[in-house]
Amino acid sequence: MSDWSLAKLLSGLHDDIQQKLAISRRSFAHPGTKGGASESVWLEMLKAYLPQRYQAESAHVVDSLGQFSDQIDIVVFDRQYSPFIFKYQGQTIVPAESVYGAFEAKQAINAEQVRYAQQKVASVRRLHRTSLPIPHAGGIYPAKALIPILGGILTFESDWSPAFGEPLERALDVADEIKRLDMGCVASHGNFTFDPKARRYAFAPEGRPATAFLFNLISTLQFSGTVPMIDIQAYAKWLS
Image (tube, rainbow, N blue to C red; front, side, top):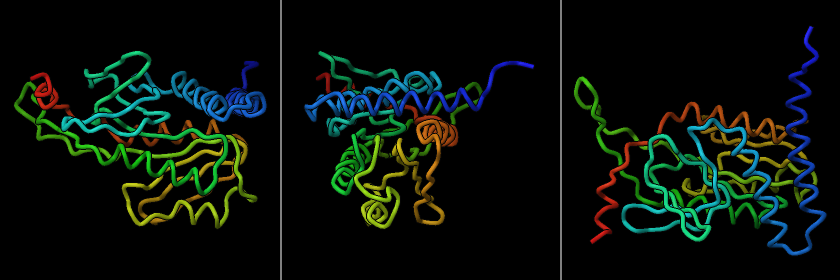
């Protein structure tokens, strides 16, 4: 009988994330420094555990029309099929076609931070995305339909008590679909996800929220398929 325990491994992953977030909140007085430390904790987890076809970075997103998103704390994007990634002086810029998800990382969830995350996610979803027909040995496949870009918020704790109740539901409820947050994690309390069929949120107060969020994100990405074939020439016109 092996001495390994899957339950202990998964529990340890969450405990590690929660402890790092708690240390960041306690140890840094400056709000910007505190926020940056929390963002780094989430990024570190995603970089370590997402399949290698995905990459996670703090980034801006750009489209072939020359429009840019706001700065996004965590952009999950394709690294297998998207050849156009720009880095300069510590700034990362990725093409809109390569984006799978955009997340904001905050110390605590409240109405103001939910609105802020909704605006940030919307700035990515508004961008133009190209999709080319795909050549193959037997001919050409039609251009792939654009995949929905996931949006969410990641925090250590909640300013509400209880964390999951009417105030959070009211903050998450938006008429404009472009601002919709699909998922979120409050590491001290649980997770929430939007059910597009039921048109409502499901709240899960779980013992290991960070691990549960990671698994839910990976599962959702699996069903998203691959990003569309980017039209590089649409970007190349900016060379002239």
